[in-house]
Amino acid sequence: MRSAIGSDDPASIIYTSGTTGEPKGAVLTHRNLCFNAAASAESISCGPEDVALSFLPLSHIFERTVVYLAILRGVTVCYAESLETVAANLLEVRPTMMTAVPRFFEKVHERILKARLKLSPLKRRLFDWSLPVGRAWARAIDEGKSPSAILRLEHAIADRLVFAKWREVVGGRLERFVSGGAPLSPDLAYTFWGAGIPILQGYGLTETSPVIAVNSLGRNRMGTVGHPITGTEVRLAEDGEILTRGPHVFTGYFKKPAETSEVLGLDGWLHTGDIGEIDSDGFISITDRKKDLIKTSAGKYVPPQPIENLLRLSPFVDQALLVGNGRKYVAALVVPNRDQVKEWAVDRGLDATDVDSLLTSAELLATIRGEVARLTSHLADYERIKGVALIAHEFTIDGGELTPTLKVRRRFVEEKYRDTIDALYRNETH
Image (cartoon, rainbow, N blue to C red; front, side, top):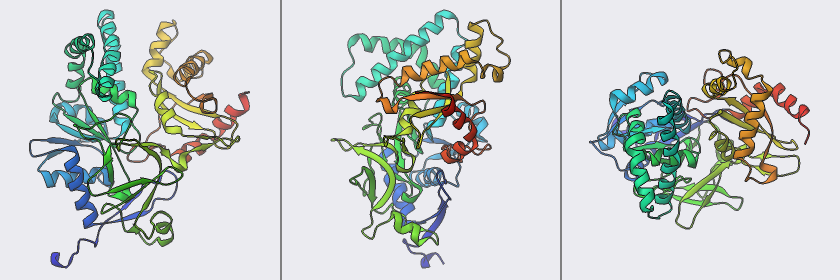
């Protein structure tokens, strides 16, 4: 009977994605789910006038909370037919809001850059001019500054001639994306914001139902995951690990009391496993996963995700994964962007029909290594990438490299490409 169900009774057991180990069943209560949906809805300001397009798996708490939130606020939810049809469904549904993971935004950006290749030389120059204008305008707004009169004029021109077409790609009336699941590159966020497509980055875990913090349209700071949602507490441990407490925290892992006690203290504080910072205005930034930190043989800790985000700013890089635990230096596995490789080959008078053969080219490797060096030149010496290996096949869910929420399964990838990594370190001398 419904009357026999209490707010602190289990409502769902949702298994973690298992990016670094065996998935565990997080027991979430009715209170957890209802509280999180209500508090998250307050932060992102949605209502009956909104239409959302959903494509992330409902077996995971991020997208499931979107459904609860929509029911609570009367938002219309439309479901994409598949991952492959999301682009077409955007044009069909014309959503006003949408939740996604950073990999989705990278794919949208890649699609836009691919369309750029079909433009006339004049329109391509206009496109290339508009990108830094948009980013400069967004950065000024983000920093609380008033863009100069010249920048406002340039942005208005770029918006009318270029960015309006970007908005058509996502349906033409999208007011905000909400991003979660992994860190979003600030440069990518600035690019979309400059194009009139705000991305509100948030943060959470399966164990927190899931939202801990999220940016809002009126309070959106690039590179951060926003403020804690109303009714929750967040603080940093001495080593920088993010701790949180409140009605969003789960009751424990299903039939795993030892694992529960490792992350959830008797005082109610949950150890998230994420390293972060909280600025003077209360915005939270995530540096990396505690378990993902690479420790070189010299004892230096390197956070891989921010550096991987830097690499993906190159048009040559589709995906990237840093390695180097216990090694002298860090290196990178790079999945090249095939369209960019083809363009590179054509420019050099090479046969662009066999991309796999091009990926074995020493000249292409040197080009991509140059891109890596350019994008990471400002990093500390121990953070700089001193070896690059090109991977021919994209990381996918079916291939086992990605979880259903498109997070990279690092240990799996490292094991799958163990021989490539070992050869990389044998061949490099630094």
